[in-house]
Image 1 (cartoon, one colour):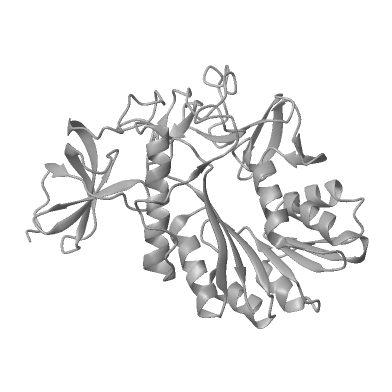
Image 2 (cartoon, helix red, strand yellow):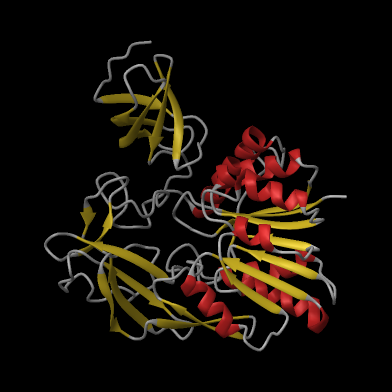
Amino acid sequence: MSDERPDELILTTGAAANGGSCVARHDGRVVFVRYALPGETVRARVVRSAAAREKYWNAEVLEVLEPSPDRVEPWCPIAGVDGAGCCDLAFAEPAAARRLKGAVVANQLARLGNYHWRAEEDATAEAVGETGHTGWRTRVRLDVSADGRAGFHRYHSAELVHRLDCAQLPAGMLADVAQRSWPSDAAVHVAIDAEGGRHVVVAGRGRRTEVVEGDYDTVQRVAGRTWRVPVTAFWQAHRDAPELYSALVSEWAQLEPGMTAWDLYGGAGVFAAALAGAVGETGQVLSVDTSRGASRAARTALADLDTVSVVTDSVRRALERTSTRADVAVLDPPRTGAGRDVIDQLAAAEVPRIVHIGCEAASFARDIGLYRERGYQVEQLRVFDSFPLTHHVECVAALTRG
C-alpha cells in the first residue's frame, strides 16, 4: 500500500458510512467518499488524509461516471462540492436516503452496541410529519465574514458561502439577510415561531445580544402547551419533531399516576410536560439541563405543574444529589451521547425503564451498548429522518431492566 497521495482517483463506492460518506478502496486503503451513493463509479478529489502512514483517505466527488438509480438532481442549490456544508444528501431520492440512513444506524448498532436491530437491507428511517424533505427547518445560525456578510460554512471549513437559499429553509426565512451588513464578530440567529413569524437576533462572544426583528423569545406550542424559547436556545430544528417526540416519549414511558420520572438533558421541558401529564398530581418529575435559558423557559412554561422540578446543572451532578428513585428516565443528550458515567449512575439507581434519544448514530449505538452491558434490554427502537437532505438522524429506544 503506497503512502503517496494522488490528487484524484476513480473509485467504485460500497456501503454508506456514518458521517455522510461512502466507503471505497484504493490500493488496499480505505477512502471515505463524500457526495456519493453506494454502488457508484466516480471521479473523486482526495481532499484530506491523516498522517502518511494512516489507513484511510477522504475524498469528494467531482464527477459521477456511473450513477446510482437513487441519484436525483440536487434539491438544494447551494450544497455539494465547493458549496455549503448544509445538505450533504441533497442528491439522493428521499426514500432512498431514508433507507441509507437506516442501514447506517443498523451497522453502528451492530458494531458499537453489539445489538442487531435489523438487517441493513431492511432498515429504514421514518419520515417526520407531513412537511416533506424541504422547508422543514425552524431555526438557523449563520456566521459573519470579515466584510459583514452572513453565510453558511463550507464542509469542515471556516470559509463561508454567502448564498443563503438552502432547501432546508422555508420560503422567506432568510429574506433580505444576505443583503444586510452584520457585525463581523457576531452570529446571526433566525427562528420561525409557531405562527410563522420571524425573529432575528445578533449575538456574539463579548458583545451584547441585539434583537433585530421580532422578539428575543419565540412562541412555540406542543400538545396544547405554550413555550417561550430564546432564539439562541435549543429547540428542535424540524417543525414537526416536538409533537412527534413528545407523543412517543409519553407512550413509551408507560407511566402511571404517582410515579416518578427523570427528564435528563431536558431543555425547555417538552418531555417533562408529557411526563407530568402521566404521573398526575401525586407523581414527581425532575427535569435537568445545563442551559440557564432552557431552564428558564421550562420553569415559565411548566409553572402550573407543581409536580415538576427544574434543575439547572449537569446531569451527573444532579443525579449524585437526588434522593428520589425514578420509575422512568428519559434522556435526550447532546451529540456526544450520555456516556459511561451517566449510564452507570442510572444502572446504580436501578431505574427500571429508560427512553433514550440520540441524534448521532455512533454515539447512540455506544450508549445502547453500555446499557446492554449493565443488564438493560432494548424493548423498542425507531429511527427518524429528522434532518432531511442531510446524513443526520434521530434515534429513540425504550430499554427495560428486570
